[in-house]
Image: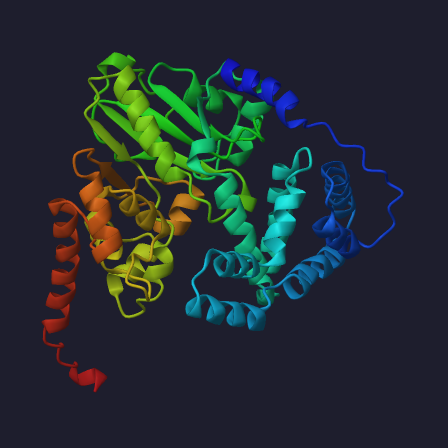
Length: 438
């Protein structure tokens, strides 16, 4: 991946990724160092302080990190009373001066601290790693959520689409980066180097990743693509060792079969929608005969939903691995179309992602993923989401604005068949009790 290597070498000088001399003699508490950084006027002193704070943080244990995040949450919060007064002043006199005062005070001190920390060499990766620690604490310490909101706000700005670089990952990519692809694969485990080679080397396989200029050797998200002739119904077939290889120019369908987010610290920062759109554009230019862009996606919430249907015999059979293919597909279709969160959007996170990008639910397939994980989360059922370039914008707007679930007739028919079967069983008269059972 020569372009990424060149970019990394260039930015090594541009961003100075070597550690800044920190002057390890600073014995102040990290909280005092943070306050000093907020008051630092000089650029050089700010760089040294920011680097020293990161160095100190890396050596802290979990209780010390918790204390630091508590300090950020409580001591660098918004002064609500002062903001209220400034808001009142601005409402009475919407002058530029009043607006500037309000805007300044309406932002927490945490955001300014993050910006100043971001001056240090390698700061982007340091802050992403810091947020990983914070996210791990939120369940037991929900009061830290305010600090996480500021983290997410800043990271969304720094990881804006305009800063991202898309690169193709292939068998000639550096071994270091290939090892990260293996480690970060979150959908279909890569078992060994031979398995990885089957996903990258053949002419009918592609892999694309997003990188950020300040983290040129760390993928943010990557997508694996199979080039085939039809619409796939099984991940086993798609990844089989003995499958036939297709010439890329003979393919008609691009299948996005695995999308993996790589950086836990960037949770809530969306890249996938941009990546899919750019990959579609790239493949369309390279292979103009491609006319179908579709996923083969997991249904991670299906079995958890089935467990909420204790009186549904088909759901029980499916969870026990005894349902027919038709029953499994009908239940999956019903879940995708009808299972909702309290806000009215689909319960399934993968469904929300793809429908939010403008795709439609195209088809569902039983026995499509017979791996232990596939059976655990969806009893082996997988789903295709179809991206029709002419309809994606319309589909996106109807989903985000009206919460409309866009799906093919086939999927809707399967969902109706499940409801019809359920209603038929419910309407049947109960059999008489045999005399000996009375």
